Length: 81
Image (cartoon, rainbow, N blue to C red):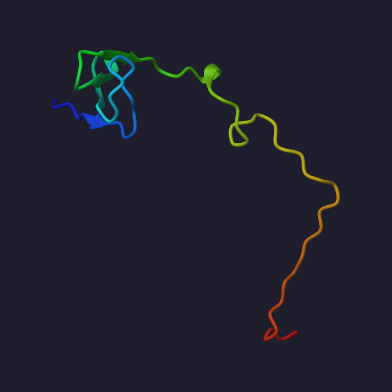
């Protein structure tokens, strides 16, 4: 199976500090990032769900709404009633 290597735009290598030199690829052993300018290789650890950032999308409880919610209807001048 052929590996698909992709460059990470704007990424800076932690070892040689070169920009736009990091590639990312996956194989049977996991996901890796590698610098094409130096010999830096780093295995990417999988994100555990407990470590994920809490956002308004993944919250367990729904957001509370204001009690005074009023629906507004907008009519254009050409609307007939």
